Image (cartoon, one colour):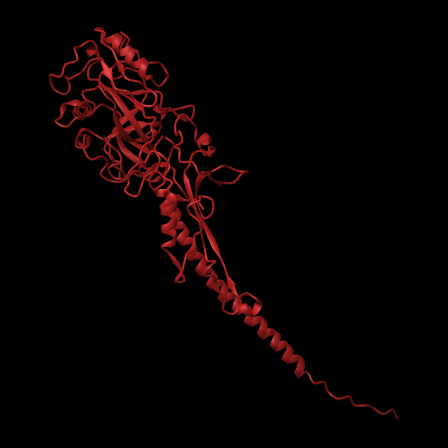
Length: 448
């Protein structure tokens, strides 16, 4: 008979202990990871907030000093302002670190932000230049591709000297963490306008300042509603109403002439109350009328009257509520009342509809492109044609606005405003978001 041999039972307690130890180690590791990741996440958010604050502050003062004075050039002190705004923040009660703001090459930089379309990606190019870039006679694509156009501030914030402490991750070999964050703020073109940014209740049609996709500040236009047929819509009256958009009329426009500008903010892309007709009482018949305001601000028509005005899209079907697409600065050169007054004597007597209703005799220089002009020719048509040629005043088809005895062809019309878009640097105005019509915004946006 075969004898059975009994084997002793295995003792698994040692294996279980090892498994438990490994599980505990993994649990501690995951706990350390979760705790420290949330810790790092908070610190990185605080660093990002500090970088945002610095970049926005620097970009806000990219063209003006801290007193709000327009410099006409890039403000190199924007780096210091960005640095101070960023380091005024703290991360977990530790100082936010920003290295070497003065050199413009490390943690605080001025430069150009480009929205280059795919397959390329948006990018920032550092630049030490403080020279203003020409913002006219160029397409949006050309401006976007121009590294000489300084339009952004980049800020990097760090936790190096005071790193983020590790809690449980030290058992995995991580004694601390040294995160950093980056922000870039971009100054675009004026779009939404703050109260008082628009000088008069007039809006300029975008087609009158754009030619082949470029903002053409060297080509003048006329706002005319007399039915001559020589020009399409180039400008309209506005009462600055939005949401709801109320049709402009004499009563709603008249009180805004020579006033404090738009009483409320004007939002980009929203319709604005307009009227493409001629509001006679607002033009020259009321006590505060546009023509009187022009005469008072132009030394009786001998120097340009500079205005900042909203730009509207006049191609939309709704003629009483045109959407705002930006802002522009223009020089008003001449304001007529009657077409047959071209040979009238340029007299200072009479009411506002009669004074200096004639062909001009002199005009001050408009730097940088136009020298002063004058003519003493007794023939008003000769003076007018010389004036038109000197300042390159053209209709929407590109023809010079010369006088013609045929009312349907003449560039000298009654109740017309002749203006020339400005070619000089302008003080920033409003919020970023408008089209490139020469006026940069005052309020930047974050792009990274």
